[in-house]
Image 1 (cartoon, one colour):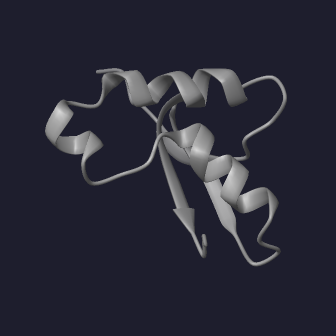
Image 2 (cartoon, helix red, strand yellow; image 1 turned 135 degrees about the vertical axis):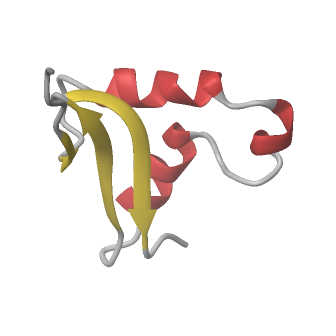
Image 3 (cartoon, one colour; image 1 turned 180 degrees about the vertical axis):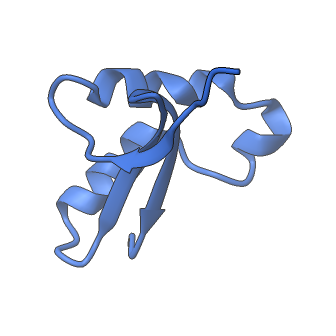
Length: 70
């Protein structure tokens, strides 16, 4: 049985667009509850206390987590 590894990874210039595209996977109901990832990146840019990471499965982004946004 193959073991998969879930981890939190930095959002980098190599993976940020993949993380942004994850917002396309949200349902309409989910979109009412959370901002698109690109909006969260912009908020983090202007907040020195913001923390954000991609949630990755075997180093491939599958989600996004943030804390301390505006």
